[in-house]
Image (tube, rainbow, N blue to C red; front, side, top):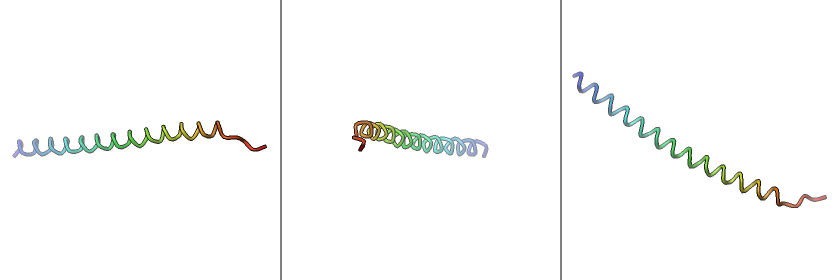
Length: 52
């Protein structure tokens, strides 16, 4: 019974770790895209002509 409990806890931990890893990858991709888009937006804003 004890061995089964330990094995079950280990499986739960691995599952949580896998989910956290997927979440981190997703967040890195989203934050990277936001960073690139913000640089692009600022580049266009700097070169835009300001009306007098």
